[in-house]
Length: 278
Ligand code: IPD
Ligand code: CA
Image (cartoon, rainbow, N blue to C red; front, side, top):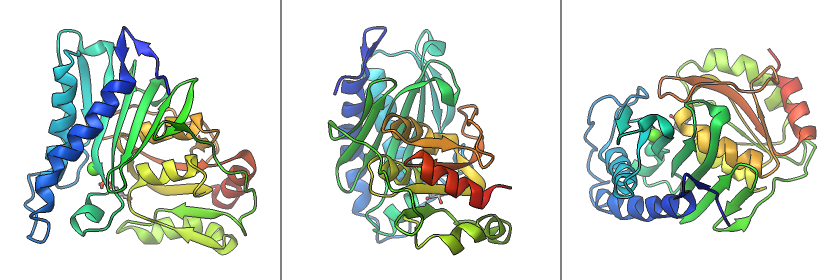
């Protein structure tokens, strides 16, 4: 797979390097997983930061610094930080660990997410990577070039019926009452509903044809979690919209939250949207 060079920057190589360094950096954290995990304070995204979140973020930032890159870091943990002489040339949006709860419980479903953009907006993301850390699977994409799983091109599924489809649905919220009413019709009309607990990776599952849609209408997910996965999905032939079936036009910022429907194809997207339309 060839990601383009941006100002002579080989993002493919750098993202791959980030992956290796994250894997090495978080290894020591697994030794203490049985002990209670210290909270390192509130991350910029509003959740308690765990040692493993910080270890992964440090690995990403150090890898980028080693390349002498100037960039603005937009991270779910440290927030917004300017690095280098020309930080406005490039924006790197990061969720160091998506699925931290799974990780600390020993559930093998969590990922790291990195999106690279020319402006701090979703529409300007041009390269991205989501790494399924426990299975060592690297999802990458580059605008206009395609989406890849460990370097092999991927495509979304063609399933168009909710009887056959596997649909991810995030209902993980204390405000379940409000969220349930939005998705009741979808649940009643879908045979196979799932939620694994790391939304970046779940959107990549749609991209990879493993599932057929993923719906999160809680208004709670941050752009840092899904920026890379949305590019991967679109490059794999999928569709992502807001609940009104409009384009998602949002800022890349740890405080920016959204609701979305991610689908493998137009048929399943239209069905899903029609069942959740506000
Ligand atoms: C979480 C996961 C989870 C979703 C939560 C997110 P985090 O990400 O994506 O599936 O239900 O809302 O916060 O906090 O582990 O980065
Ligand atoms: Ca996270």
